[in-house]
Image (cartoon, rainbow, N blue to C red; front, side):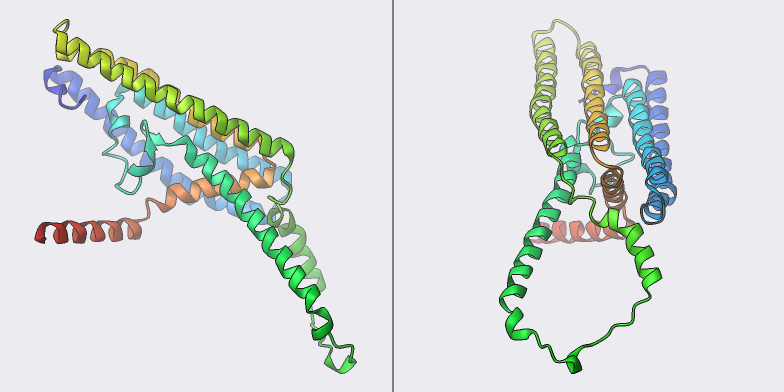
Length: 295
């Protein structure tokens, strides 16, 4: 809608809008590159080789990287909200289904967090079933004959050092406190209230545009400018919601849980921009269109 009404806006304004769009597209490309080549590798390195205090510092660095992104996203929204709502310049077709009001839907964050908890619960259930099976078959399979014993040579020093470093990470989600699960429930309840409320504001802004233009009270360009101003506030509130959800998750989790969460979120953002994946997607899309047109 905003794009179609740009024709009635002076050329100088249109040029400025184009510059804002290009600048944010360049910023996002650089932001992703920094995430891929610097912050994500550093976090992975310190997850298994650092003390909790040092790991906490790198968790905060990556967290700040996300917060800086949403700060810049707000600036871009204020400059030209249409470039955020219609992100054709800096988003690929694989990313688009995950977007809501210009960026990732906040449910992506909570779903990612829940996936860690569900995976851990499934692992516990599987281990319990294995223990029951082992106990049931213990009498049949066990043999006291010393000749059947097999000694395994283990480099104790290296193994202990490895386990010492990996153990907190391997067991990060086994320690699920009531505070953690309760806070996650609160975050999800808040989203169930805030997401529909924001969409209600979008519908109200759209209805106001239609009413103003349909009744002839103002011109279409004026009505679009008023609607655009309302959309700026809505998108900024959505950005604040996204940023707050990430911060809440980082604050309520342990340093190892926060590291795994931010690593998963970063890997998701990097993964859906993978060139091989995008090439395969475009190839499948062309094949689908070709088969549809031939039929």
